[in-house]
Length: 190
Image 1 (spheres, rainbow, N blue to C red):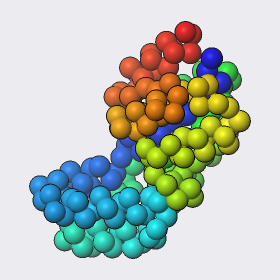
Image 2: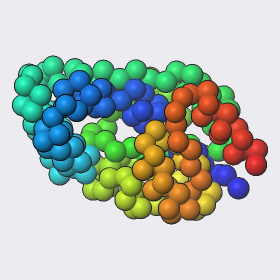
Image 3: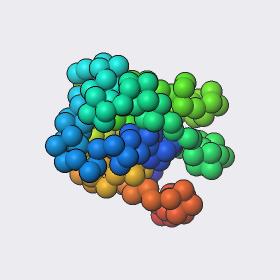
């Protein structure tokens, strides 16, 4: 039985500026991409500051720190999904957010009513680990006061969906908003 629904942030609740940045500046250069991915993992795990991360990837892309930050931070929230969470999920379930993030962006990304929908938020830099490390999924379940088997997790990255399944969570691979809402309804009614 589902007691909690947990959402990834970037790529689900918002667009993912980091992926857009990678596609635009780094995907054509495997060496630069590998260095950028390592830097991204380090910031998400809280091993380097966000400003150091921006500086490192800006240098790799050959652009200014300001331009790199502007692109990466150019996220747009998923209004339709937030309305569904507010109207259908929040009244019935605990709601969590689990995200690989190098800082707490919530107040900059979302309106206050959107942030207030989450009973608990776990960000990787706070834990010192990144998805798909099992500790990430266990931490959000523990904070929500539920077992992993009582959680439904939604993420746009298949490897993170699999990470959730590996510890016993039900999980949905987010591809689009309305398809995901239909899958959530299907799981919730099962």
